[in-house]
Image (cartoon, helix red, strand yellow):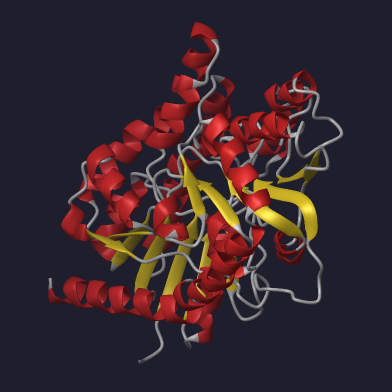
Length: 415
């Protein structure tokens, strides 16, 4: 296998939240260890990359770093060498849109038009119109974790009133671009069979052009820790608070239902609640203030500790393209209860208990079942840990990516 020079594109790469920065870091490192030369080309916020991997910054205004109008005006005013895209970003954001995908695509298209020495270009889910031009000039692969149409669907379902729905539609206006771009892409890699099906349906992409490669884990971090004693009544869940897709409401309601029998139950939420937002109000309404804690801005090691110190992990998502929390909990040997939704059954397999998504009564019964049958759950968790180590191994996954890259390069050169 000869060394490839790879450009890995990421329109935003927050290193601790949102998953994109973490994925870019892990994939670039896995490919670098295979001997390839990797340039990560990113918009803000920027990822934290391992040594040996070059970061090329395509600086936008990073307007979503703040929701203060004054701060956003200041960002525009103070930026040197402003261009059309900066003004576009500002005014698109001002009317409630999300312009980062389009603008990044235009910026990276301009950058790559002056640089021709990459063997292949990989884009992480921007699905921007600029990618179609790049695809003409380079062997090109788009990575789509899941169609954002699913986020839009659940955001609309859980919106309150016409005004909120209006602004949700404004925010998700980038989906029009995504739906135009996806059917024209020559190769797409996604992370689960469920995502492949949904991309083909929602984006009308040819399923023959969509290839499934699961996500990997840092198995040096997400692993069993037999020296750490698990807390008998500690339950861990991962949820971006106030994001309906993650189903945190279901978990909170289930916890409130079980406290009469198991008053020592504590829920640790890896996520950041919005101040005085929906989740905080629900916690007060359910009298759960003393039973729920939030852990924010955690390192990988700290997230792993939450799994390793918990007796149970609950994954209550209404939709997951892959389901990192399920895979991470499995790798840590933590018993799992998961919603029977989207890609989660693919990840959990037979190593955890599944319940109907959104059904807090069903989740409550599953948690009771766990408390009454800990040994059988722990036995499944031991087997699940072995499965996770075999399946979500970045060394194996990097080989699968290589195979797809070489096929893409060969087809491009033959044309």
